[in-house]
Length: 226
Length: 226
DNA sequence: AATTAAAAGATAGTATTGCTATTAAAGTAA
DNA sequence: TTACTTTAATAGCAATACTATCTTTTAATT
Image (cartoon, rainbow over all chains, first blue to last red; front, side):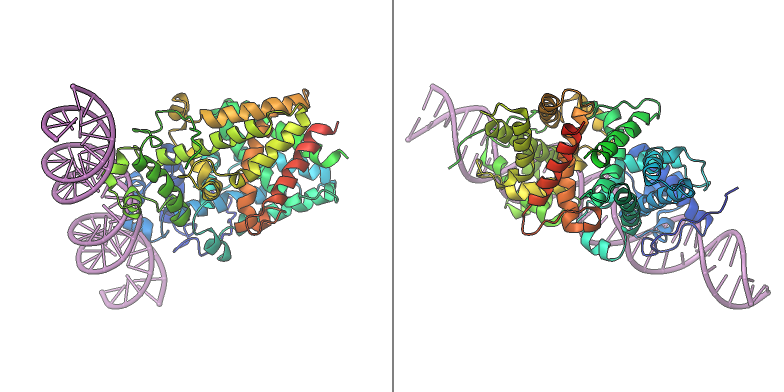
C-alpha cells in the first residue's frame, strides 16, 4: 500500500513512464536491486529482464538504455531528498537550524519511512553512493544538460545554496558548498567502507552518524567563523 | 628527448610494463588522447589499436582490460602530482606555505613542464577530471584495494594530510580534507565547464585560478579559524 | 654474421552486449 | 465482440571484450 506521492521527473528520461504501470515499477524496483548486486558496469537489460521474469525488449520500451535508467534513478533519489528536506524544514524559521536539518536529511535520507513501495530507499542509497556520479561524468553531459536531465540535482543545489546564503550572506561559495555537501555525503560514506585511508570517519552497519558530524563541522567552520 | 624520470607504479596494474617499450609508450600516449576524444565508455582497445596502427591483441599484451588501463593512467597522474609536490615544497619550512604550494600544484599540475614525452599532461588532466573517479567506483574496489591498486592515491592523501595536521594539529579531519581537496580540484573544474550551477567558480580557456582560490579559501577557513 | 629469443602483427574465433524488428498472446476498454 | 494496447517470445545483427595461434619483425647473444 503506497502513500501515493509521485516524484516528478523530466519526461525525456524515459520512453514510457515507469511509475504508471506495474511492469514499469518492477523495472525500477529490480534495477535498483540488480545494480546494487552486480554493479552498474555488469548490469544489462537482459539480466534485469531475467531477474524479473520479463524480456529485454520490454525493458527497452521504458528506457532507451541503461545510462538513462541510471539517470532516472539518480534524479529520483535527489528529488526524494529534496521532498524530505521540504517536509523536515517546513516549520523551521532559523536558517542555521534549517541547514542542520538539511545535512541530517542528506546523510540519513535512506532511513526515512519509505513512501513508495517499489523503491527500496536503503538500497537505492547504496546505489547512489557507489554509482551516482557516473550519471553526469559522461561525454554527452552538455547535450543532456540542455535537455534538463540534471535539473533535479541543480534545483536541490539552488535550494541548499539559498539557505547557506541566509546563514552567511558574505560566504562567497554557496553553490560550491552545497554541491560539495552532496558529494561528500556520498564519497565519504563510500571511502569509510572501501578506502578508509581517504577519510577520518567510520561507518559500520549502515550507521552514517560520523559522516553527518563531519559535514556539520565543515559547514560551521566555513560559515560561522569570521 | 625525455628527462627520464620514471613514475613507479604497482606492477599488477599491467601485464607488461608500458614504460619499457615504444609500443607501450604509444599505448599510453594514444589512450590518453582517445579517451579524451570519445570518452571512457566508448573507448575500446580495438579503436585504440586502429588509431595507433597496431592491433587489438597487441594492446591486450600490456593491459588486461580498459579498466586497468584507466587505473594505470589515474595512478600515473597522482604519482606525477606527488612528484611535483615533492619538488615544489622541497626547501619550504613553513607548513602553511607548503599547503599553499600543494593546492597550487593540485590544480595546476597540468601546466608543469612536461617531463615525459609520451604523456600529454594537459590532456591527461582533462581525462582525470572527467573519468578519474570511475577508477575506484567499481564493484571490485575491495579486491583491487588489497592488491594495492590505489596506493598512489592513498599515499598522496597521507602526505597532504600530514601537512594539514602540521598546520593545525587539532583539526579532526586531515585525511578527509586532503581527499576532498583532490576531489574538489577536479569536480569543480568539471562543474565550471559543464554544470556551472553546481559551483561558483569560472574556468575559461584552461584557466583554473578560481578553483585554486576557492580551495585556498576553504582550507584557510577550516584550519586557521578557531 | 648467424642464431635465437622475445615482441609485435595478422588473423580467426567465441560469448556477450546492446540494440531493433516481428509476430503472437494476453489484458482492457468501447 | 471487437478492437486496441501492452507485454511476451523469438530472431537477428553489429559491436564489444576478449582468447588463441601463427607468422613476421626486431633485438640481443654468440
